[in-house]
Image (tube, rainbow, N blue to C red; front, top):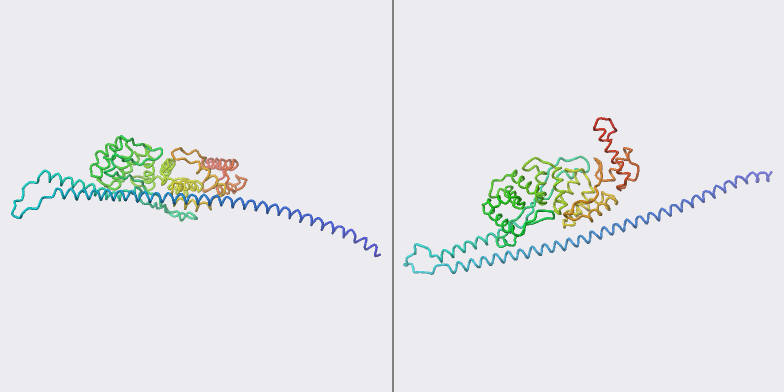
Length: 436
């Protein structure tokens, strides 16, 4: 009987042993799989850390370069101020010498006072007056060195959700043209931008004299140049109308002259005209037209236009909201020394995928002022500010199957095209599925 029991237990023990061995093998396989995945994860972490180190290195180099540029700007500004101070001191000394040489000699009280002033005395007084005017003009130039207006606050209705903090836009102000100093009429070079209207050397003195005359209340020469199509004259005339200097303040006229300069291809005028459109100043507001003008000025190399365009993309003002484009233009503006643009670009990094950041960085590296925009457009759908957001929305609609990693792939673009076609069909009344 014992033998029968032992024989009956043998199959059970064998099956259990087999089960234990199978379990051991499965655990070994799973351990090996886990180990391989850990190795892959470590490699991915190392790659991410390497990318972060490269990015931090770029920021460090950019900060160092910005500090160097800022130091150079401060040094140049101090040197220019020292030069102006020396000019004023020389003029005042010349005035003092002129007055001392032309002063009348002391005479006894009983002596008769001449009824007329001698020609020499008259010439001395006139020369002193001219020198005094020149000195006052030089001292007054300190207020004209800054040619950028303070930021303009654009009021917007507070939206719902995470965009509420962007209801008010602090955009960069207009770029104004400062007049030349009297001593620099021959060397006056109006500010220019890539792709903008060039002022030939033979025209510079004429423009400088017309601007100086306008500051003295004689607008005729400046208006004649503006009507002849000289963009810098048009912009300076617009500035006078905007500020009410020498003419009655008239934002409509300021906007009209700025528009003429912009139509002539002047990027600075495009920047200024975009602000008139954004404010609705001097005419109706048109955010879309403002965005188009800022894009043209930004492509020409105007750093303040690049910053403003990035703000429009970040908030969806006049354009579809697109954080990748916002990041790109903030980066380009930062490359021109804009510290605020650098800060906003860093703030956007956390909201973009590594693929979107890499794509934007490549486009930033390809950018050249005045060379146009040869980079590919970022394809999005309404309601999505990044490719990753668009992928998630299309996946919920059943139009896209794939990773939501922000990578602009052919499958993603095909899904976008299907979505757009469905929207066009629905808009035509065919009853296609709508956006849910």
